[in-house]
Image (cartoon, rainbow, N blue to C red; front, side, top):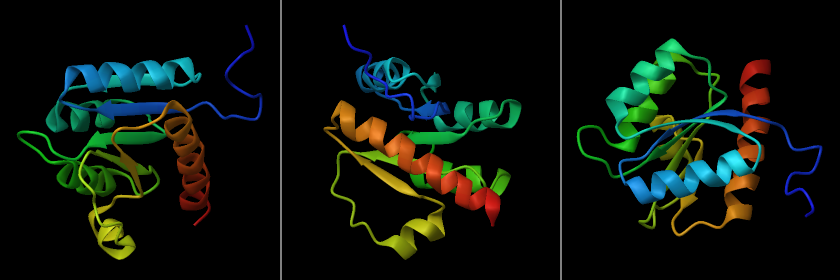
Length: 136
Protein backbone atom coordinates (compact mmCIF):
# COMPACT_ATOMS: atom_id res chain seq x y z
CA UNK A 1 0.00 0.00 0.00
CA UNK A 2 1.20 3.56 -0.62
CA UNK A 3 3.15 5.16 2.21
CA UNK A 4 1.24 7.80 4.11
CA UNK A 5 4.22 10.06 4.59
CA UNK A 6 5.63 12.14 1.74
CA UNK A 7 9.42 12.38 1.83
CA UNK A 8 9.31 16.10 2.54
CA UNK A 9 7.49 15.53 5.83
CA UNK A 10 9.88 16.15 8.68
CA UNK A 11 10.04 13.81 11.61
CA UNK A 12 9.42 15.21 15.06
CA UNK A 13 9.91 14.03 18.63
CA UNK A 14 6.62 14.83 20.27
CA UNK A 15 5.66 14.92 23.92
CA UNK A 16 1.95 14.13 24.20
CA UNK A 17 0.17 14.99 27.44
CA UNK A 18 -3.42 13.76 27.52
CA UNK A 19 -5.40 12.40 30.46
CA UNK A 20 -8.05 10.58 28.42
CA UNK A 21 -6.66 7.18 27.50
CA UNK A 22 -8.60 6.71 24.27
CA UNK A 23 -7.71 10.16 22.97
CA UNK A 24 -4.07 9.66 24.00
CA UNK A 25 -3.89 6.33 22.18
CA UNK A 26 -5.56 7.63 19.01
CA UNK A 27 -3.31 10.69 18.85
CA UNK A 28 -0.19 8.66 19.59
CA UNK A 29 -1.17 6.21 16.83
CA UNK A 30 -1.79 9.00 14.30
CA UNK A 31 1.57 10.61 15.10
CA UNK A 32 3.52 7.35 15.12
CA UNK A 33 1.88 6.24 11.88
CA UNK A 34 2.87 9.65 10.49
CA UNK A 35 6.50 8.78 11.18
CA UNK A 36 6.96 10.74 14.39
CA UNK A 37 8.42 9.66 17.71
CA UNK A 38 5.93 9.99 20.54
CA UNK A 39 6.24 9.88 24.30
CA UNK A 40 2.75 9.90 25.80
CA UNK A 41 1.95 10.68 29.42
CA UNK A 42 -1.34 11.19 31.26
CA UNK A 43 -0.70 14.34 33.28
CA UNK A 44 1.06 17.68 33.19
CA UNK A 45 3.45 17.01 36.07
CA UNK A 46 4.72 13.84 34.36
CA UNK A 47 5.00 15.75 31.10
CA UNK A 48 7.10 18.52 32.64
CA UNK A 49 9.41 15.95 34.27
CA UNK A 50 9.90 14.17 30.97
CA UNK A 51 10.46 17.47 29.15
CA UNK A 52 13.32 18.25 31.55
CA UNK A 53 14.93 14.86 30.90
CA UNK A 54 14.67 14.61 27.12
CA UNK A 55 14.75 16.69 23.97
CA UNK A 56 11.45 17.22 22.21
CA UNK A 57 10.58 19.16 19.07
CA UNK A 58 6.97 19.76 20.02
CA UNK A 59 4.61 19.42 22.95
CA UNK A 60 0.95 18.51 22.49
CA UNK A 61 -1.11 18.97 25.64
CA UNK A 62 -4.77 18.52 26.39
CA UNK A 63 -6.39 21.69 27.71
CA UNK A 64 -8.79 20.34 30.32
CA UNK A 65 -6.90 18.00 32.64
CA UNK A 66 -6.97 17.42 36.39
CA UNK A 67 -4.01 18.66 38.46
CA UNK A 68 -2.57 20.95 35.79
CA UNK A 69 -4.39 22.52 32.84
CA UNK A 70 -2.96 22.76 29.34
CA UNK A 71 -2.46 26.50 29.82
CA UNK A 72 -0.31 25.81 32.90
CA UNK A 73 1.61 23.09 31.07
CA UNK A 74 2.32 25.52 28.21
CA UNK A 75 3.56 28.20 30.61
CA UNK A 76 5.88 25.77 32.38
CA UNK A 77 7.23 24.36 29.11
CA UNK A 78 7.97 27.89 27.84
CA UNK A 79 9.72 28.73 31.11
CA UNK A 80 12.02 25.78 30.39
CA UNK A 81 12.44 26.41 26.66
CA UNK A 82 11.18 29.17 24.40
CA UNK A 83 12.23 27.19 21.33
CA UNK A 84 9.67 24.38 21.58
CA UNK A 85 6.18 24.98 20.16
CA UNK A 86 3.22 23.96 22.31
CA UNK A 87 -0.10 22.84 20.82
CA UNK A 88 -3.25 22.62 22.93
CA UNK A 89 -5.74 19.83 22.29
CA UNK A 90 -9.28 20.90 23.08
CA UNK A 91 -12.86 19.90 22.50
CA UNK A 92 -14.01 23.35 23.54
CA UNK A 93 -14.26 26.11 21.05
CA UNK A 94 -11.33 28.12 22.29
CA UNK A 95 -11.46 31.63 20.94
CA UNK A 96 -8.21 31.68 18.99
CA UNK A 97 -7.02 34.93 20.45
CA UNK A 98 -3.44 35.03 19.22
CA UNK A 99 -2.10 37.37 21.87
CA UNK A 100 -3.78 35.51 24.73
CA UNK A 101 -2.43 32.24 23.36
CA UNK A 102 1.07 33.71 23.11
CA UNK A 103 0.85 35.07 26.65
CA UNK A 104 0.19 31.56 27.86
CA UNK A 105 2.89 30.07 25.66
CA UNK A 106 0.45 28.31 23.35
CA UNK A 107 1.37 28.27 19.67
CA UNK A 108 -1.31 26.10 18.04
CA UNK A 109 -4.72 24.63 18.80
CA UNK A 110 -5.79 21.10 17.88
CA UNK A 111 -9.56 21.04 17.80
CA UNK A 112 -11.38 17.83 18.79
CA UNK A 113 -12.67 15.87 17.01
CA UNK A 114 -9.50 15.95 14.91
CA UNK A 115 -8.75 14.38 11.55
CA UNK A 116 -5.54 12.48 10.81
CA UNK A 117 -4.63 14.95 8.04
CA UNK A 118 -5.20 17.95 10.27
CA UNK A 119 -3.03 16.56 13.06
CA UNK A 120 -0.16 15.66 10.73
CA UNK A 121 -0.38 19.01 8.96
CA UNK A 122 -0.29 20.76 12.30
CA UNK A 123 2.92 18.93 13.22
CA UNK A 124 4.55 20.31 10.08
CA UNK A 125 3.26 23.83 10.84
CA UNK A 126 4.66 23.58 14.37
CA UNK A 127 8.05 22.46 13.02
CA UNK A 128 8.16 25.55 10.80
CA UNK A 129 7.39 27.64 13.91
CA UNK A 130 10.20 25.86 15.74
CA UNK A 131 12.64 26.90 12.98
CA UNK A 132 11.51 30.47 13.49
CA UNK A 133 11.94 30.29 17.27
CA UNK A 134 15.42 28.85 16.83
CA UNK A 135 16.41 31.49 14.29
CA UNK A 136 15.14 34.31 16.50
